[in-house]
Length: 291
Length: 62
Image (cartoon, rainbow over all chains, first blue to last red; front, side):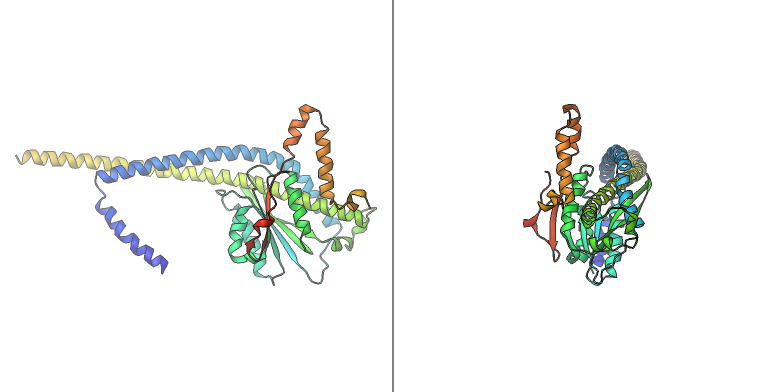
């Protein structure tokens, strides 16, 4: 119904434009349009430059942060930890940021979470890091949200950021979970990945926990707290790096598209201008011959 | 059980305090760079039944 109305409204304006197609007014309109597209291109170009610089830094940071995540993930893999709870309550942590204009990085993470929530009986809860994932999930799955962290993405994530979020997450009640984030692969590609989370119980009952020497409950508890923070740190770094690289590509494409539009508009502008000149000449000449 | 655990700290909190002390003990020329790593602007809001609980927001920066 709504769409129908819009189509109807669009028809008369379309006709009006065609009637006006050759005249001074459109010449002006085209030049205004041309100017605004040129300005947009300037903006996207400078945004690309900014994110290129930020990306270089994020990639350097990511190299240093990788061992944190890989170490923590390796522990769970070696000890063959599996979730053993009878009444599972899952926690999904979406790692995104507050900033947009960066392609599909945020929607990819949100889509993964939506897929998991679609097959869920209501015991799965969500923690959103970054306003973008919150905005996407809020409408349909608002009741699943437990915690939202924002002011993410303005500055590169620090370990203290991750530690503070981890402290809050540790207070929540869950038996297993996943950190869902964008894993950076190369400048042009990233992939939605996840890191597992487990409860203290399932870690101490893991079949191969004896691989590790001199573990008591206290040590495991401390390590669990630390590994949550370090995995979050790693995930946030990967996310930030993917986001910057993706923004770089997105802005590059936007500048290219603006360039194409400028070319087309310049062409129509010149054509219209000549048409106007020709028409004026015809008017003058035919006016003179009528004398 | 360690003393900090008995005092109700988590390991993260404990190690953050330790890290802060180490940063403060650095020589002045190195300290400037290290203190830059010691900030956090993330703000957290608990949600319940699809609504944010604004009163319980945890502001950023330490």
